Length: 633
Ligand code: ADP
Ligand code: MG
Image (cartoon, rainbow, N blue to C red; front, side, top):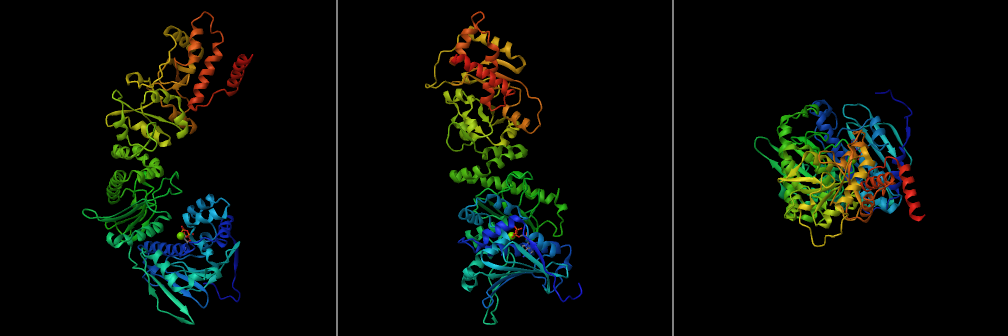
C-alpha cells in the first residue's frame, strides 16, 4: 500500500477513437429498449464470478477477503441520490484492467458492431439491439458512471469514472474486498429505471437464468429496504425442462452466446450412464459475426460440476459445428482441470462424439419437420456444416444427407435424396457445377446441354464444395460428376421434346476445323473436340477426366498453392452458326489462312465464359479489334 497522500492522483485517459464514436451513439440514443444495459451489467457480473470461481479451484486463498466465499450480485437503487449500483464479488479489475477493458474495444463483437455502423442514427441504434455493445451501453441511461473495483488477491482498489464524453479518469479508491461496483448516475430522461416495480421486472427478465443469486434493494428517504431476492441463483441447465420457459431459454442464450436473436433450435438434455453430463446448446437464428474466422473456434462453454472452465476448448465440438452456442457441464472431469489438460482428454473426446451425434440427429429431425425453417438454417450455416463432409470421415454420408444444394431444377434448396428421386431413367450420375458465386454458376455455358435435355445439375458456390467433392466421389452408389470435367455422356440420357434439333456441321468439315485448331493452338490446349454439352455457346473449356476440376484449380492458383495447371480441352458446339461457318471454310483449300487469330480468339472466349483469366489481354484486345475492323471494313 502506498503511504497516505494529501492529494489523490487522478489520471485522465482518452478513450480509443472507436469507443468515443460508440459512446456518442449511446449518449444520443433514443433506443426504446435501453433496458439492455442491465442485461450487459448482470452478464458481466456473472462472468466475473465465473472466472474467479475457476481460478479459486487452484488458488482458494483468492476468496479469503471481506467479500466472502459465496458469489453474489447486489443491486441497489438510491432514489435520493438518483443512482443505480450493481455490485459483484467476482474477479474484479485492477488499474490496468480498468484502462484496458473499459477504455478500448477489446471485444470482437463490438468491433463487428462498429464495422456495421452506417452513419444513419436510426439504423445504427437498432444495431445495438442486435449486438448489445457490452459495458458502454450504460451511457444510454447514465450521464456519469463510476466503477469501483478491487482485483481478487490484490490490496489496492481503483475508481474509474467517465461522463461518456471523450475521456475517463482513474484514481485509487477504497474497497473492503474484491469485486466491482458499477454506479450509474441516472439521466433525467431515464428515471424510470429508479422505479422499483419497473426495475424488478427488468432485472428478473435478465437474471432468471443466471447461476449467481441476485438481490435488489431500495434506498429512499435515508432508509434502506431489505434486499429482495430476484432469481433462483441456480444454473439454468440444471433445472428440468418443464420448469424452464421459452423466454428463460432465450435470455440464457443471449447471455451465454453473446447473442441477440431468437435461437433456431434449443437442445437441452442430461446424459446419464458411463459418463454424466448436461448439455444446453443453441443453434442461432442469425449468423455470428466470427463464423468464418480462420480460427474456426467453438465458443461453447465447458463447465465441470457447475464451475465454468473455459470457452476456448477445441476438443468440445468439431469445428464444423462451431455455430452452436451454449454450455456442456461434465460431472466426470476433475474440477481443477487446467486448460492444457483438456487436450486429448478421453472423457472430453467421448462427450464430443456423443454430443456431435446428438446434434446431427436433431438437425435431421428439424429438416423433416420444417423444411422452410431448415432452409433458413442452411442459408446461415450450410457452408460451415459442409466442412464436416471433408473433415469428419465417419459421418461423411450423414452430413451429406443433411446438406442442401441449389439446383437447376428447383428454386430453393434440394437434398441429394430428392435429386436422386428426380433423376432421368438413363441418368447414372449426380451432376454438379462449382464456381465463385451462384450467378456466375447459373450463367455457365456448361449447363446448356443439360438444361436442354432437362437433366438437373446441382449448383455449388461455397469454397468448401470443391474440397469435400475431392473426398466424396459418390453418394448412395451414384457418382458425383462435374459438368466441366470429362466427356459429356448426355447422349445416353433421353432427350426431351423441347431439345433444339439444329443441323450440325457435317462430320468431314468439322474434323478439318478441329485438326486446324489443334495445329494452331498446340500446347495451349490438351485437345479439341465436338460436344453435345452446348446449345447456345460456340465453345467451352473442360477438364480432362483425370485432371483437376477447373474451379478448384483456380482457387488453388489464387492462393498460390498451384503453380502450373494442366491444359484444358476446348470443346466446340457443332450446331453453332460460327462453328458451322468455320467448318465449311476449313474444308476448302486455303480457306482458313487467318485461322491463328480465330483459334486464339475462340480459346480466350472460352476462358472468359469460364471466368478464367486471359493470359495476354492486350493481344486479345488487338485480335478482337482486328476482327471488328474486318467486320465493318
Ligand atoms: P464483454 O463482456 O463481452 O467482454 P463488456 O463491454 O461487457 O464486453 O466488458 C468488457 C470487459 O470489462 C469484460 O470482458 C471484463 O474483462 C471487464 N468487466 C466488465 N465488467 C466487469 C466486472 N463486473 N468485473 C470484472 N470485470 C469486468
Ligand atoms: Mg459483457
